[in-house]
Image 1 (cartoon, helix red, strand yellow):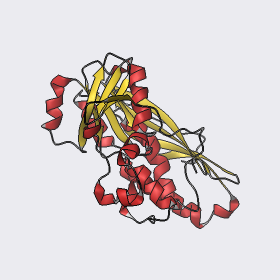
Image 2 (spheres, rainbow, N blue to C red; image 1 turned 180 degrees about the vertical axis):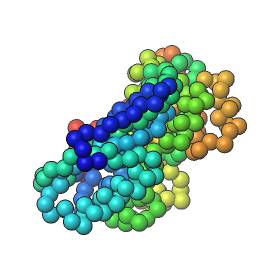
Image 3 (cartoon, helix red, strand yellow; image 1 turned 90 degrees about the horizontal axis):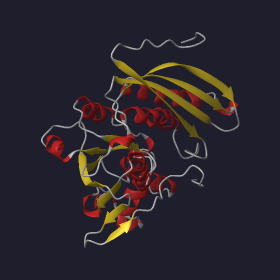
Image 4 (tube, rainbow, N blue to C red; image 1 turned 45 degrees about the horizontal axis):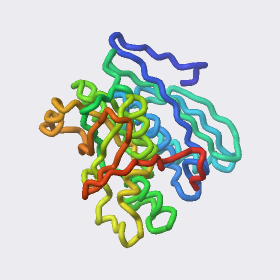
Length: 300
């Protein structure tokens, strides 16, 4: 830190992973709604999730930050506090970056990670017959955002935590990679309906998802009373940063018999037909339409 650039010593037998991510005011967060420390945490968590999705470990990051002069005091201190906590949590050191002045808060994070040579898991490896898994519960982050926006929850509410302080599945990504379990993998950042289609397109396959197997937000969240549809949240809600991955049938038993770093659920099967279908409880089929996060559609 403090020099003209950072030096990275790549280890023998490893490949370097590079990723970058924008986090923009009024596109990804609102300064009056999202606490500054949550903005600091989440801007790094989002980028680190890309490293998790390839089975790697984040090593260091660069931060490019533009803020208005009015936010160079307490807001900036709290932002850096959240960023520092995330960096320690994910084992990802600050290697430098750049700052400038702007009326809106603009954040760009570049993360450098590494994975053992030949072990990185791509989106393009899924094959017909593979089982489809997801980690965690889907739709929790979108629910938290909606509750915050409707003032039905405050930042300290547990229902808002996944939206404000997401946890990239780094340990699970490494577990799958070290054991060569996953044939394809990506993180769910824009919603299952959008990201599953991306994985299928990259692999040249289709998918059949069983609605009854989706790990949706439960009744304890008061969904019905608030008018939210758990299935729609699970399919289309963004910001979950869970892992979506495929496993050959012959290896699936090892997942269920093992002590995993995170809860995972088998939700369907990869098919040769390139259609991406949702199978209803009664057996009816319908195409899954991509309705997840789109940066070119109004958000807030």
